[in-house]
Length: 243
Image 1 (cartoon, rainbow, N blue to C red):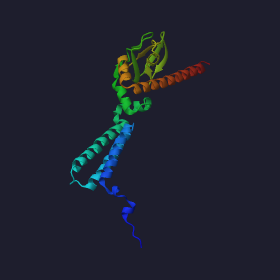
Image 2 (cartoon, rainbow, N blue to C red):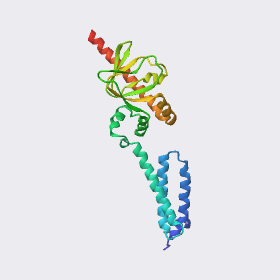
Image 3 (tube, rainbow, N blue to C red):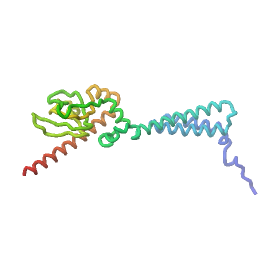
Image 4 (tube, one colour):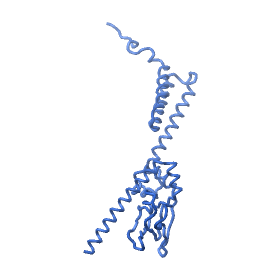
């Protein structure tokens, strides 16, 4: 009976650790072509784990293997930390508890870390009181601040007539922000908390985080559409009440 030798099926070079060191080095070099940073980090961990198998195959008593072991473990650790930070920044856990409902209800087009950066460019301010309303916007003025109602309410006046009421989740000066035109109406508040982005804050945001700035434009445009629909519904309801 003919006996089959393992060497017939496995070339000699496949049984040499040097072959796998070379293959892993090639994979490490090719991984630099990956454009996704998070994918690159996963590949780096996989390659480092491959190195670990070959290192223990060769044995730590061989020259340079202990240093290679330390390098591989360091690569796994550092890339693991960065991957954890990547997913943490994109989870709700990265947001302060007080901001989570605001994010979910009004800023879900952004990732959590993008919303956090947006808020960092703003100031939280309290305006007016129950007895003393305060104007936060006057008509026919150049754009100076973009505002978002966190709590309380604001009233929109046109030539002394109150034409609309703004609620938490609504924006103030958004039309002027989007178009670059002067403001068209007066807005006053009674004891309301607003998020305020001055023109300089928005300029820095646009320069440092253009993608967040573009998403902000989309969010404001969507809210503006909702306000127009709401205003139309209120007007339609008033017309039926007068009939």
